[in-house]
Length: 354
Image 1 (spheres, one colour):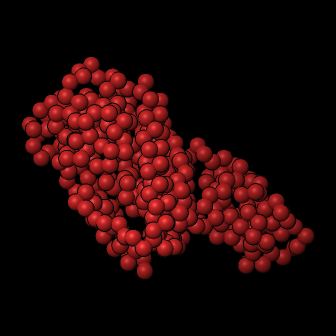
Image 2 (cartoon, rainbow, N blue to C red):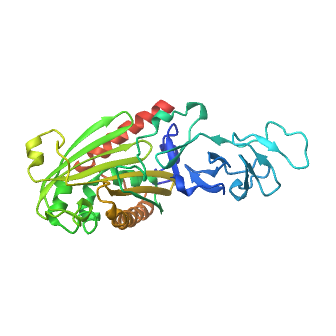
Image 3 (cartoon, rainbow, N blue to C red):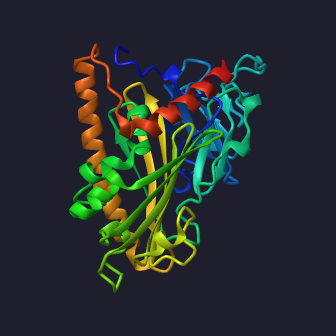
């Protein structure tokens, strides 16, 4: 479309998140990913199967069908499909032509998430699934969620790549209304490193007050301290972040090295952005404190819903303006260094696919 967010701009040789593992049962569920209609179901044994969501006969949605053991039956005319997409039965017809089949997508259940390979099946590489950890990891107290956004996935990528917006969009949530914390997100020392399929960004902030996302509710010492975090943003839209608070002076003592003591408080988040269509995306997230503070799990989930709702409001409003003025191009500023670095890496991945 005129705003330049064609689905051709997303890599296909990659694993996209279809949902959390607890979202799927034997009841077929419809998903749209990269503009392709999919149906996801569990076999009787619990294995995840992903097929194109259209019967080979009349293109009726298989997500309106029924799981029968390992197979999926279309409930328009009863055509039955195997997990590999081949046809097992055509009611009233003894011979089943090999051409009666639907596309099967490689699918992996890992780290509490269901991942779907959107490229050619023979290119699927499970080693490309990131270390996501997931909401049930014993080191963290995480609660999963998701939300729909009426905006291209790439606008959400931009948002996650540049966290200086925390001081503005999330001043009253993640930044806790603190001007000092706001300045830390804007002016904190950052380092950017390239990864084979993304970027890693480290941020150091000294002498900042505790905020809700940094353990304000549980820390006995309410005075200033040091904040250290890193995040990785990986193709095709995976965001993983560790953040921790340390006693004041820790970062100065450690210099350029990571802190070498146990943090007073730490948190972790794993997130995934899945393009639905050119102008819609699904955003999956789990966010919470380390396992020392399980009582904060629900608070962090509610905080994340508030903050990501703030992102949703801003990004959807941004996209409306972009559609109204497609001839106006965005402008790059100093804060966009990480975004530009990642775009270069993604460009190389797309070229390798071509």
